[in-house]
Length: 292
Length: 182
Image (tube, rainbow over all chains, first blue to last red):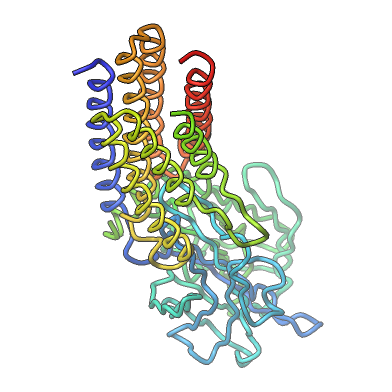
């Protein structure tokens, strides 16, 4: 056998080995269906003077195969089917059009065999009767452009009424290290620091009120004319699942005045949306979710 | 022999640079491979060797695979395209193309030896060795690139174009050799 034929034979063997390994890995890592990342978002529904609701837009993200040409073009919330929402993977003018133009460039951030997609959602909150206390959206029926419908856990999107305001704590400014300073305008007694989704990130956050941990603030009294300083810190997220989730948590200080009226004021919120993923992060997440 | 190489040259040219008129592909890749197939048949008529026979066999496979490839491309963007095995289809085509080109050049080397043109035979043996090594590298890069969807795929495509051009140069030089010297 000539030297060239030996090279050809060796080359073909090498190609076949690589091909088998590549196809096997592709099969193993391929997703049967899109995997939605969890979002824990507190949306404040406060009607503005122009009739629009603040925070009626949010994003959901999902991982799918890189060559998945479908796009999300509709969403329905199982917890509240009457809540209309527009969903689109194209973040411009989607709220004014009732269809998705799939001829546009395929959206998403490609990471090897996966694509990380963002779905922009606009809630039609006019259906929400005022005042709402707290509405949770946890599961959704997602409609894709090819007619596929998938029911998914989306995390917890909480719609909160934000009309209760008070003048007891006047915001004076922000300092370094995520601190906020308030002037106390009336005598108050602290009750708690809480928010509907705070427990979802309690291991990741550090909230202090004048150097007291937020879990121990009950009963602390502040007199009129004093100041109150809050500090909110979100630590680095290393857990493979939490790392890819989205969080927008807005803790509140609950307190009572001398007449035992319970009031609250927001402290610094926590906003986190994981980005700069590497393939390994996605694989870890998908394995943890048992999707691969 | 000259006519055979001429056919092979233009066949590879068409297969490399698909000619489109507006949105219609007027000369798809399989037309190019049919012309290459005819070229090898002409070479066979003048010099019967096992290498050319193998080249003919692989050219037939390549024609069939290219027709399937054209058919699959009609479904680009639809579910069929997302089936793992289909995404590796270009690798199979590339392997067959490597085998076909290898045996065309190998047959030509045998012919040089037959007519006692050892210098040309040695020169083309070296060319074929380089070509084979780089083609193997290209296909391996394509495999990994298709899996990871990354820059390796772009490198493989650039390498594939360079290799096609080098084949055209080799075939054209063979044609010139027969016109001028042999």
